[in-house]
Image (cartoon, rainbow, N blue to C red; front, side, top):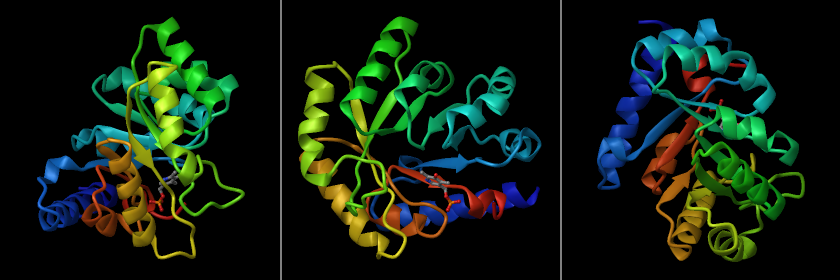
Length: 220
Ligand SMILES: *Cc1c(COP(=O)(O)O)cnc(C)c1O
């Protein structure tokens, strides 16, 4: 075992326990290993250990390492967890399997158009700015329901769930509970929430996808 594979095994066990407390099966939670700033050499042991869910926050950085890894491990699932510009929609749809950051009509439309062109269906999450921070991406909480409805009805997109990144100085569980409630109101099963510092709490509040970077790969 390497430090990263050992850390991932520990995290997997903690998540199984947190899921059990929430009366869910361990495999109800997808652990996305976030690899931004780490290169293929750092990622490979985790792939060799059998993990298949990975996340990157920039399209450009992901293009530098993932095509080759995907060729070697065709069953891996790549998640885009960072903000997306519409001029990068084509590359994002080509490379990624899941996008967690759909947050405005222009991006939703660009993704819908590209999926049609490429004949590829990605799983999509709507990012919600639960802390209503001016600098942060995401739809405003009060606009979430209408935005999800627009994605479904006007663009024919199947939305899998909601995603949030709580403000750094807030108690994260308040945001996890809020996202859970919003997802329920929208009739959505997916909740992408929880990072290295708070993934166990996120699972107790219903996370279906946690995004864990530094706790696996070390400080960036
Ligand atoms: C980097 C990143 C993570 C992982 O953060 P860690 O604290 O290293 O676990 C999760 N989500 C998003 C959107 C990120 O950009």
